[in-house]
Image 1 (cartoon, helix red, strand yellow):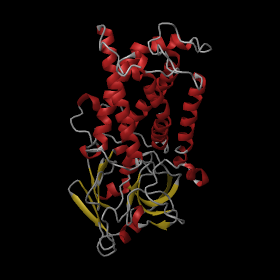
Image 2: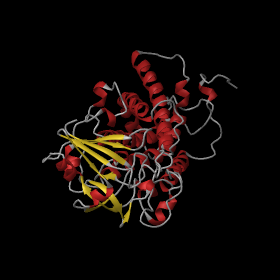
Image 3: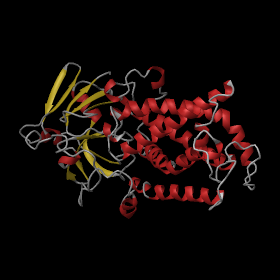
Image 4: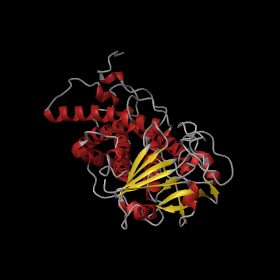
Length: 410
């Protein structure tokens, strides 16, 4: 028996072959393309060109391009795009693992390069395998709120995505024509005689290739069923066993919807949010206004039904928020037209304790400095005494425990 993985006879599974690999590859071609596009939309949702506090990827250069300012309509836009990104990524894991398993003999094949085209394909394959494992692993860890990787998730996932996608495109250009030719013979599971993925000494089969594909599809369906529910409410939400929970659900009542950051975890004390201590500082055009919560309550209040959607893929249905419009706060310091704004939280540590919003977000009539939710004052974990709620914005830009707002061009 061959003991070296570089020997074709070392790999004896009768399932391997270009037909099996091609089916998985075509599924990944469509799925990963959608993942990459929704990832770019997630990047754009942070308005990375607005302010460095919104972008955790320094030195990104041309890789950090984006084509438009993130809109506020439809209100559920980020809820949809990020929900698709995370749910689809988790659903594709069995397909990815099966695809990597199907081509693993090629990683050990000798000689390393038979021609320039073959060398390019081998390099793209190594980058593709490494990039895929890195991107899916960091993505799943982020979804589960387990930050076990060194450094910040944002630059790691950002740069990893570009390396992976470059290898993915190169590999697709080289292999898609072959995959399409193989798929023309879907009814014929028998590989061609010169199929380099087929073992010269295969073991006895215990399942057909179609059965193996059904098994992979069943795994993907199971992951979908145990993830997708975090984008819904009611009993369906409880089916999302693999999606992030951010701790136990907040129970019942007006504030019974998911949170990730509690006041305690961010060091927010009741003393600094008390009526005597807390003041909102509003700055702009050389003016400074300090407002207590009681003074904010005397300003015109408006209501908006808006969801919260987070980068981890979870979201809530519409909650009824009530508070002061951001554009009205801008007028207090002399801005008749809605400008950009830099918002700072009482939170002293961690990512996104400061966030910037574009003028179109500030000017939206449903963008609020919220004081109430679902008819009750904000709870400490939902951002009491005041928090932002902005249509279609990622959850981390809906700053909680707001302490200062600086209006002006950023």
